[in-house]
Image (tube, rainbow, N blue to C red):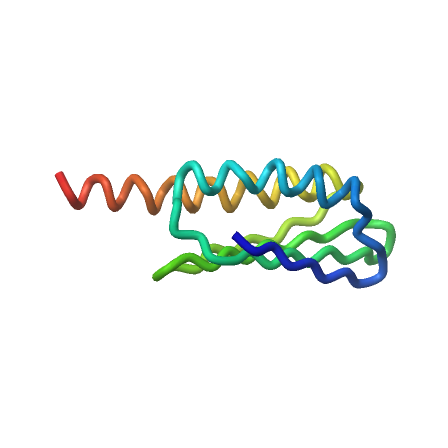
Length: 97
C-alpha cells in the first residue's frame, strides 16, 4: 500500500504522517486489495481540509472533511472512508451468499 501526501497552505509533519498511517492500516483489514492512497491536507482560513482517495483493484473510495484541527480532520475523513469500505465489503459478502 503506497501512501502519497500533498500539502497546500500547510506542512504535513512526520508526526502527522505516523498518526494518519496508523488510521489507514485499518483499511487493509477490511479490504486487502488496496493499491494506493492519496492524502491532501489544506489549510484555508484557519481550518484544515483533508481529502483521502483510496484506489483498490476495481474500486475508488473518496472522502473530504473540514475541521478546526488536522487531527480532527484526519479522524473524520478516515472514518468516512472506512464506512465506505465496510459497506463495499458487506455488499460483496451478501452477493456471495
